[in-house]
Amino acid sequence: MKQAEKFKRPVITFINTAGAYCGVGAEERGEGEAIAKNLMEMSDLNVPIIAIIIGEGGSGGALALALGDEVWMMEHSIYAILSPEGFASILWKDGSRAAEAADLMKITAQELYALNVIEKVIPETKDGKALPQEVIVKTLQQNLVEKLTELSQKDTQTLLSDRYQRFRKF
Image 1 (tube, rainbow, N blue to C red):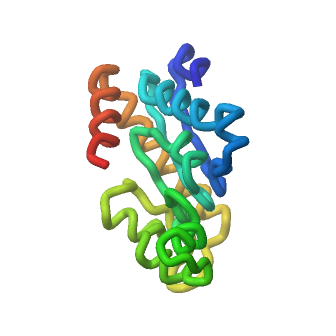
Image 2 (image 1 turned 60 degrees about the vertical axis):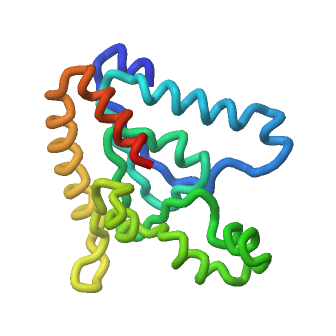
């Protein structure tokens, strides 16, 4: 990311992770510190950042890569602080209630877009049928070029301030 900044190139992250491991060993090895350091680094990058969740965006692992000027999600991806099974286990002591937990958590691209957590949903279907991968990629490419052109027009102070304000609202 620092190299991208040095050469004035935008950063695009593609996120597909179940998330950071939740355990004492992971903390002993500095997992939390690594996530925090990445968040700090990304918050100060003076180039545009777009984060795209392409599958599962779970926990601190996803958060560490999603501090962008915009966060987009593929239509069938999810983004959450923990798995619905984990949420159900904590809330009801019953992991089998994962579907109920997922409904409560609001983890789908459409739900998060409606809540203004993400800025864009990349369609993967049309009229109930899967779009060809080439169409999805072309749409994503066009959207990226358009948004990165827009973000690149901003002066550094505005870019960083807007990024900061985006995450302050949560």
